[in-house]
Length: 294
Image (cartoon, rainbow, N blue to C red; front, side, top):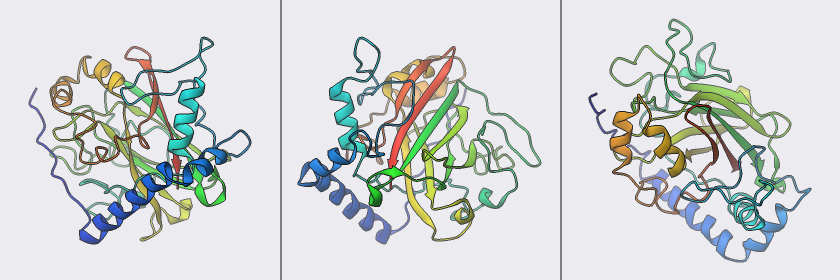
């Protein structure tokens, strides 16, 4: 199988880069400075800032699990994730070269059918289905300005590459496809869930899923209404298992050359605010969960 061409590193200009850098410095200051106690307090039971609802336990940077004998997250992992996720806003990232939201070419957000939970197939003029190991991921949206309470009624647009590291709407042979893209409205718990396939790994990037958060569904197609733009980092353990399976041969080769610490998106903070909690298997599929504070 021919390895896909590396995707270029696109950004949104100097102004965006500077604002992102300043945002990250403020974020780290909150975590390690005087804001640490407040962030932890906001995530105590009853505050609305708890971990995402998921059957998986807390994951470390390498994707290993830290649980008690009963299978629940240990006190250490719970506190660590609380500090990392509540009171600290999700790092802002570039949209990437292939967002499909109208900022760089096609705009799938204006298409009928984009609001859906299952994003494995194209919709509209094509019904092509992306193949790969099943993945279900849940984002829990938290309102930082209101004590990390659930951000009910917000909307999320999520997208990612296929098992060969290629993007619908953009890559050669996929310009008439729009699979692995979709929009969901957050429920009363601030949660959105998508069913999809496990993304591949392409040269120069750690495996990831892109997403944009909007204040409401009506704002998904309105310019300038984005609350947050970020990415989900997938765990090393899950990636190793998936990429050893059939169909992910090119991803296995690319993944072997990448590290989370050296990634041009996650590398500056080790991805600790964007690393998903994951569980599952190649045979049964995987689940991923991430708290997103905005």
